[in-house]
Amino acid sequence: MSVSCDSQACSSLFTSASHSCGNSGECNYEVFYGDASFSKGKLGFESINFGDQNATFPNSIFGCGNENSMSGDRIENVTGLVGLGGGNVSLVSQIGDKIDHKFSYCLVPSNLTSTSKLQFGGDGIIIGREVVFTPLIIKSFAPTFYYLNLEEISVGQKSVKTGQNDGNIIIDSGTTLTLLEPSLYNDFVGLIKLVIGVEPEPIPPEPFDFCFTSSDDMHLTNIVFQFTQAKVVLNPQNFLIDYDSNLRCLAILSSPLQFSIFGNVAQTNFQVVYDLGAKKVSFAPTDCSKS
Image (cartoon, rainbow, N blue to C red; front, side):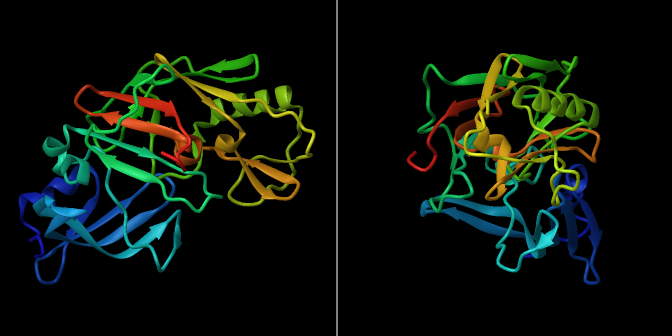
């Protein structure tokens, strides 16, 4: 059933997407994401089922997307986009009371054929010595985004501090590459060149900013994203992409948006848990292909 343009459901899109009225009074929407992915279509009501009839959510608001895109390139077999953000009509917000306002995912590296896991509710969440927690920050002007506070980035024994403490990076499972605001990115790249001892290719292939010639005997160190109260250690598969047999590219770009995003390549092989009630995010190193 379609949603009318003058309904509360349509107006609630204001904080997370743009909307307009169709010729028949239906609610049209457009939503764009940090990596240029987008969905456009009509808003509707439908029952959402998860696995069996015991997990049914009637009269859920959803977008009937007739034009969906991933990373700015239209892909015909994209079924849709799941809203996990904090906006009023995201899936997580609509079913929040039924899932204790918790969800988690475990993303497998893109070179594997196994399936990533998305879980709603608190069952099966890993608790152990390697789990780290950091505060989750919601900003009133952009409630759909989940902000963390990034204090510093380390490469080997060298580090660069952000000097901020008010929530300076968005964590986003829907953005592929990590984006750093330009001044932080430039400092980070300086550390990469100094510690790893590489020089960038003069003309890197799109969409990358920094690529270098690699060899089998090259020593690659881990990097650390130090969030408030949480040290998240990224190994090379979390921040490097093998472009071809001897060219590697940083999966971290200078942000054209003037703010930073912690993307999904950096989050692979972590179980990432969002506890929206307690306002915290946890990271647990995990082999997501076996979890």
